[in-house]
Image (cartoon, rainbow, N blue to C red; front, side, top):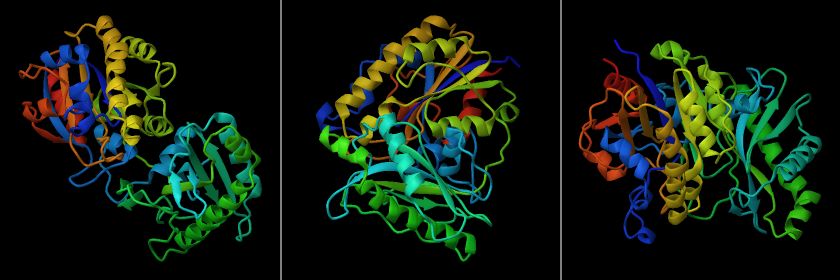
Length: 419
């Protein structure tokens, strides 16, 4: 057997649907992508349902699946993965939740789920301290840590004597829970903070729901009086009125390390807390590769990595959430020119396979994750071409690799590039 080196790239939320602003094309179809086109000509394509039919997944469970890990009812929840990724002090029995800093209107309706996205680090840290210092739980000994990460994203960890259960509902109305996974809901209508409920009769879940509701209610009051918000309003920025919570968990996952699973050395290039948490759980070394949009640095790190490397590029997803089809197209072109261009100039495609896909689709017309399939391309090394010429959704539908489940992608790719 010939050992193949792989650069496995997931373009966050790159899948899309035809958009009127792009003349009925998807952003991938509208974008000029000469470097991905070069890879497509030398590769084979298919399409992928990352988690399951009818499931519009969040990034955490989608990435786990795209790396070959299926979870049943035992999935611990995104909150735990993000807590691990932020380096939070988390232990089994703590309650960890993913949160969004969000903006409320005068009657309590959610006017922006991400507080305008422009939540700088000083503001995020200031309101987090205000919440940690101001929240008082009714249960003696209960405490909370609020850990801001990137932009509007935040992790909340609640600790209580006797431990807590993650078997509770979200307060974020845009997501629901399905077997421990976060699943996107229709977020187009008016929304308000949901009340957290226990999903079973476990007293630890009942207590967890009570503490989450106390935190949420007090957070609105504390942030309503926040000096940070007064400064934000004076500067024309959206207020941080609350934290929308979702995907609770209360234990660390235990899984087979990725190197053992595939008998293949794997490192990782990632920026966001959820991807960093996944990397730690799976035992992947995270390579230094600059900031989120430092694509040339990421290309250099991927080209120079020992063994195979998994690369997660965030760019397209946020434009999908914002409904910005032109911006998403530009983001794809930026990645093609500044990541794939330098990468192809630095590797031998006879020795290194490049695999490109996505964790999920984020259509601009719906401004949220969807269950639409995402394209898959396996190019170079020993992988024979199938006549496809562009990395697009339509080309993926006609590719010889057919339709795959996300958890089968790496096995299918390795089968094509190993002999």
